[in-house]
Amino acid sequence: MLRRFLARTFLVVPATLVGCLAATDATDAPNAPNGPEEELGTSQQALSAYCKVNVIGRGWKDVETDYLPRVIHCENGGAPYEALKAQAIAARTYMYYKMETAGKIADGQSDQVYTCGSGPTAEQIKAVKETAGQVLRYKDTTIAAFFVAGGAAKPTSCRGAYASTEKYVTYNYGKSGSGITQTSLGWVNPGNYRNRGCLSQLGSRCLASMGKTDDHMIKFYYGMDIQLVQATGACVASDKDGDGIGDSTDNCPTVSNKTQLDTDKDGKGDACDTDDDNDGDLDGVDNCPTIKNADQLDTDKDKKGDACDGDDDNDTIADAKDNCPKVSNKSQLDTDKDGKGDACDDDRDGDGVANAKDNCVLVKNADQKDTDGDGKGDACETDDDADGIVDATDNCPKVANPDQDELDKDGKGDPCDDDVDGDGVANASDNCKELPNADQTDENGDGIGDACQIDSDEDGIVDDKDNCPTFDNPDQADADGDGIGDACVDGDSDGEPDVTDNCKAAANPDQADRDHDGIGDLCDPEPDTVEGGALEGDAASAGGCSTTPVGSGLASSGVAMALVGLVLRRRRAR
Image 1: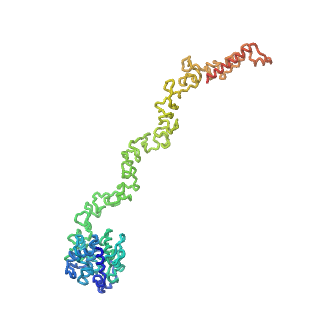
Image 2: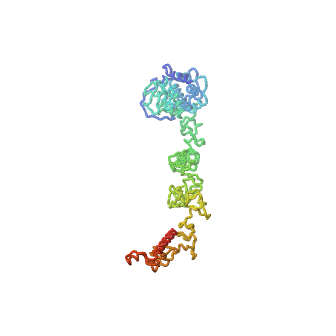
Image 3: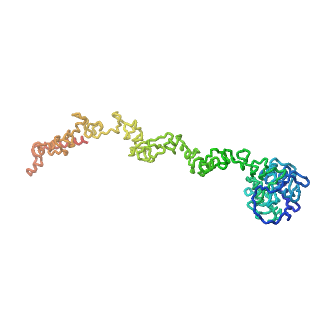
């Protein structure tokens, strides 16, 4: 199919073919000066429609209902719809040019192929009908709208690669006047208004696939100032606005609207409808003239209603991607990752507690626990127990313990440690909570572990039960019943208990007793006399001689006994 198609359009080139050489006639190309350029648009120049065409060897044919549908079917039938419309306009224009200059046109590759063994499709017929009577002209002159197959078009530029007919194709988008490129298929001269370039059929297919319209294709090949003129006649419906749509079917017959856009489908085209979206707000004041929005809601006050505003909150995040389309939140912060931004989420941490009541708005804490009752939940509190020690370093973060007591050095403060002494026995059942005693030995069965039972004076009575814990008194004698053992009574307050005090009536903390008679010097009427005579020191001082008094053996025995008594007293006082 493509090979036949290429061969057919290539045969337009030889000098014996009328369609390609007619434009070289000097009579068709007056040397007119360049005038002001016109943009492409349907023009209401006085141009009578050709309703019949004389096809050599085929007779007279109806142009709009027979000839043109068959030509575009044979010439470029496999093209997309917009390319078919461009082909219909080019084929009609070339036919008008031939009728104006020769009064007839050949059926074949020398001009345009009318017969090719099959008939047009509904889409091809529609393309002709939608462009009925539209002809390309430049400076009131019908152009010879050349077209060839061209080379295979590149996807992005739609310019053809090398091919036998690509050399004839012209790319005139953005060009106008004498600045366009004329095709070598015609006489190349700025004064030849008939030659405004050549269309590539493969290229037009590429443009259509990229979403380009027939208008764009016409400009792409024939220049920006080519005119689309609407011919009038019995075979072409009345078209007051010259948009190529007959008045009988035009939804805006007096306002040009080739697209026939009718947003609200009320039968009146947008071009002449004062309320395009039919929402009761006139287009002049409607902040979304083509999208129904009777409430005219405009969240970001940018004069573009939310219904047609791609960024309702104007935070530069498109609504389709914005996790808070109605509330500006450029950061798109979404703490609980629920797809709803914090700025518009009434439960930011997703814990089931509304922000207004949540004591930790950004940290999940469904239980709302607040140990120190300061209104800030523990989950987001840095000092839960308000003891002045931040949780990160507090050895008891939930129980106040500013002194950070930690008996067993296990990293857990005593107030919250269920085994303070670290002996493996829980406080609740430990018989000695502050001293390790894993065996829980309790010989006397009093519920207090032996490890906690202290007996300072070693009299067999533990201190907390001993009525005299500092002096040995296993009998626990307490003559006056005052709770203080007799062993601890110190009547003269000299620090020596009465039971051992050698001078109970007078304070003598040093317990001096020179004659070792057991009576302290302070209470002894004869402190320097031993039984049977004076102390040796005194005798020596009196006589100067060292003699042994009568009874000196007894004296020596008394001294020995006194020393024994002293040793016993001191042992008991330990």
